[in-house]
Length: 419
Image 1 (cartoon, one colour):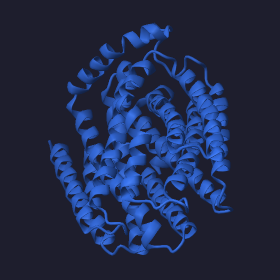
Image 2 (tube, helix red, strand yellow):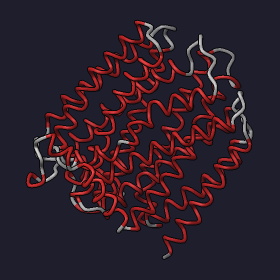
Image 3 (tube, one colour):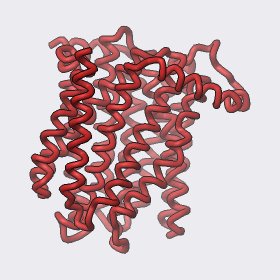
Image 4 (cartoon, helix red, strand yellow):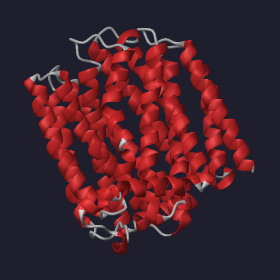
């Protein structure tokens, strides 16, 4: 009942509701756009997809701007975050429209990837800005824990819903990819307009720290990045949480590639059937994310944040092999739910640890570093999976690696939580 009461308090906060609406629309658009990319790269009838092709696509779309991600944090700590949400989503709407035009034009793959990269690159600013701004619209650590349970998880559910909508649109015909991308563009535009409900200075950083000239901000990037890394190095608590989140994200990424290959080649006879199965799997995983949002505040209150991370990792260590080794849709769907819960529960806890133990002046930089780790872990997982997965996606060895990593995180977090 306390959780329900705290949730009601949060939803009475006008600025929190506005920031949440921006997140929901933006991440719903992300879900639509990501499904459009998946259908072009993985489920196009004319392509014979392999684990190596999936890994290459993930590297092209995630790795370049992930390596540059910390630089976005330096800018976030100098630009008004409300303006980042406004112009970032507006720019993504325009870039998504350009991507749709390229799909229709049947251009070379590298040009399509470059356009898609430009859309997802701007996403680094938007997501890091949303996380860094959250403490500015709530009061106290208890509200912050609840906000971290509600906002990022609601965003993930919005992305899942957007992905489901994209799947539905895509299944109406074999040449609907451009229309799906245009749907994403419309949602990005709505998110941009919604950010106007908040005052430009509301989300910080403090005006005294703003550097309005882009040249000044860029010149200070290297120094600011070093300051952010030093700030993180001096705080073992957020550093350990980020390490745990990175490893669990790696596990989730490796299993994602496995499921993609299973849907494409083992569980379905046609591309449409495989796409439908993938949509169901994404929906079940989204249900796990929602469950994590409900359970995490209660679990953190009883186990502590690190205790809950240890519990999530332990669940993954036990259930990933127990369910995954069947390599059939039913047990794998159950695993998708559990691992969705574990991954999101860990992320909520990590967000709270970072936000509560990092100074506001450094939050943009730390969350940009967080974002880099998040994406590099996923790309690394795809690369490892590409080396271990056979064409049909069935690999007991990969499940074994994932199980060991989950167990290591569980043991380390339990030990740190007791200390």
